[in-house]
Image (cartoon, rainbow, N blue to C red; front, side):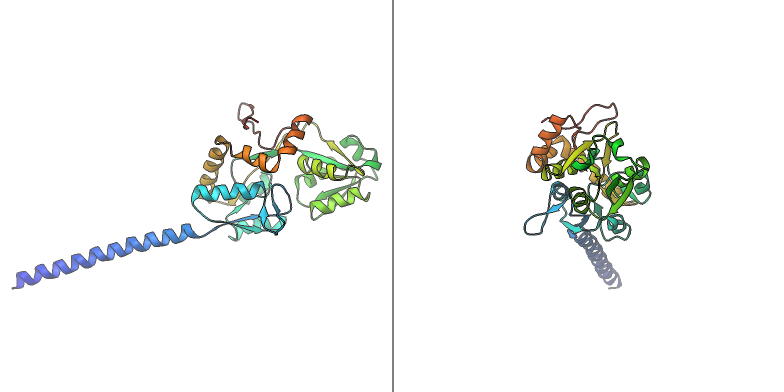
Length: 288
């Protein structure tokens, strides 16, 4: 009798133990699934079309938006875009309010101290939008006493002006459109920013502006930022960018958003945004 009772109790304990393990594994699986179902928050400043902008309905649109949506499909996560002021982008990662930042952001040593960057996905060079009445034809013409240069706060053009144009007065403004307005209306002699922005705004203001393309520059590299130490997400981003390039993803983005600009850049002999150079200095962009 006692022996039979012991066997029954042992079976009961075994069933409870197996059931408990099953529930634990099920709980872990549910927790993992819930985590993967949470959207990835991507911060960007929706003020730089066609990379980061808004459509007629006010919804996020552009190269960076499509790129992040493709990344979401790659990792099986929903993507939620948060329109964030430029100065708040890196803090949004540091405080955990965002998982990723992509906003045509240059990889710089001072930023690398605060966040981790992906492999470069694009490059850009600087140019100057100038008011026609200035008569400036080179960047040196603007580095003169009495000249006023508009720059967007915190941009690479801002840093370039402070480092290289010490004779001119630098006017720091919060956004690109304000800088363009200052030049178009003659309150500033020039606006330093990336070549694509300068080209587009020159085309919009042909009666009042000209464009100067600064020679002898090293291209700036753009990267996607994650919180410092988030190696898992960073590894996923880098693997995605490699596959996206190999499968011709950038060709589709150019065709959708930048076909006219690509043709103009080829004509002017400028290096294109997505034509990256490998370690041997050979172009690794897609064939057009």
